[in-house]
Amino acid sequence: MVARSRGVAESRWSPGGTHLAWLDSFDGRTDVLVAPADGSGPAVVATADVAVTGAGVYGGGVFAWAGDDALVVAADDGRLLLLDAGGGPARVLSTGGRAFAPAVSPDSSQVAFCLERNDSCDIAVVRLDGSSWPVRVSEGADFSWDPCWSPDGRTVAWHEWDHPDMPWDSSRIVAREIGAAPEGPVRVVAGETASPPASPDSRPAVI
Image 1 (cartoon, rainbow, N blue to C red):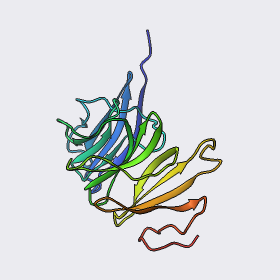
Image 2: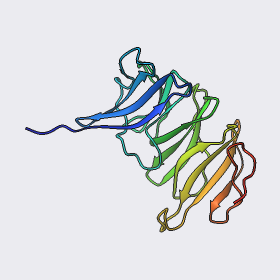
Image 3: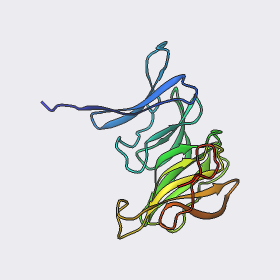
Image 4: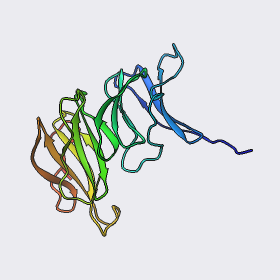
């Protein structure tokens, strides 16, 4: 008899605190489960119709909340999907590579994510309403991981580095302003040739 293992990871509250989502892995499959915070109902498998990337993804997580009723999920086939938290058909946000580490903007209008192809690993941004294709915002680095948004939703920051270094040998935190399209140059805020990063209230911080 072969033992079947179960794992739970990436538990996250929805922005309004009304629901809790987490990854549930069993017998080689991983799903996103969602349950009401007040215990008023059972957990729902939000990804019943799609296989998602397994737990333990490097460079960021498997899913992110997009408001209290929707989730952005990295599918096992590489696509980035927008799902209703209660399950149902998915909206495809990205194809043509392996998407992971989604980070939704504060106003839930866009998502930044890692997009890995055969020869690159970039940060891209796409609108959640599906009105545009993903736009690459990183430039030139061999590896770009773990995107996040500034509190005002105007800037995306991420961690990047180049061969032959490993990230603990030499790497940098960089940022770029995001509007209708990437605006201005990529700015190094920590690591190699750093300038002061922003504090949580978006004012320049002192290093």
